[in-house]
Length: 43
Image 1 (cartoon, rainbow, N blue to C red):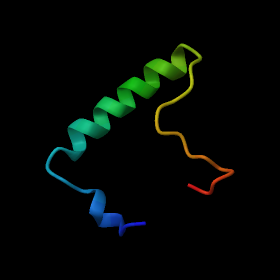
Image 2 (tube, rainbow, N blue to C red):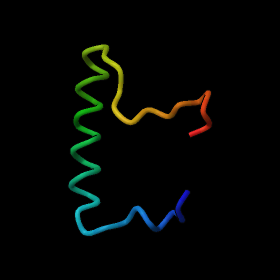
Image 3 (tube, helix red, strand yellow):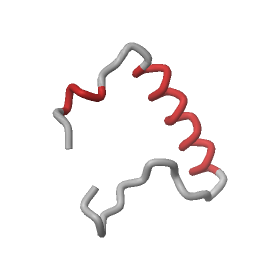
Image 4 (spheres, rainbow, N blue to C red):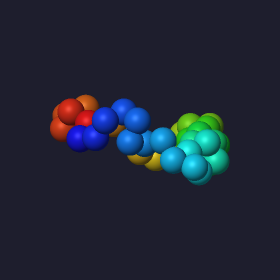
């Protein structure tokens, strides 16, 4: 585990927007989302 701020880096917003766009596309197509939380594993 890492502190919350460890995820902030120069290309954060472009990477975030890319993942968001991909997940919106997947959601609309009824596909599994990228980087989903594994609730049974707790992360």
